[in-house]
Length: 182
Ligand code: AR6
Image 1 (cartoon, rainbow, N blue to C red):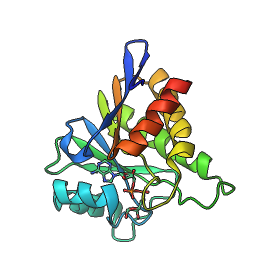
Image 2 (cartoon, helix red, strand yellow):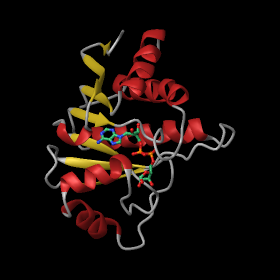
Image 3 (cartoon, helix red, strand yellow):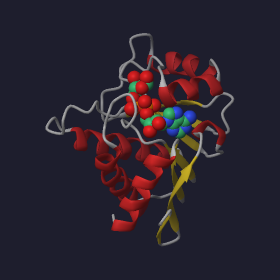
Image 4 (spheres, rainbow, N blue to C red):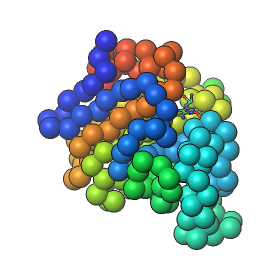
């Protein structure tokens, strides 16, 4: 099964693991619109990174901060093995007729663009929206892979993007989608 796609000198890779344990210039978080922290990967990132992340979000974006679905913001990474965390907000799955694919695409493209502007060379992404927000992994995988492929094709700095899947099921689904062609 394919776990890497080469795009010229650049690479889109899939790995199984805990995103908080993998060093990268930028770690992308699956956040909510209020940037309040929460469960899933968001909880894990704030726990592992420590209070510096929330403190920095507060400083940059204020108490009433809002990050609309499909967009992203940046903070420092605290104790995580990264320079920055980019907090991207994916859509809740509502059956597929509520622009979910467009919003998921936009969350990935916004986060990617921000990482490239920060001159990141390595970026890790979780499978945004596919946990608490209920987006089926088999429907999310082609959207996510093509958004990141397009990002890599136009990148100035980003050389390696890794999608970190927490469990084996989603990893197999992403591998299959990569194999099927992006
Ligand atoms: N490393 C990598 N992936 C992980 C990790 C981890 N440590 N932990 C979970 N995942 P979710 P969402 C996977 O629910 O669906 C929060 O409360 C998980 O298995 O984290 O976008 C936010 O504050 C799944 O495949 O994010 C929002 O309110 C994927 O990460 C809401 O959840 C995304 O699952 C966002 O929901």
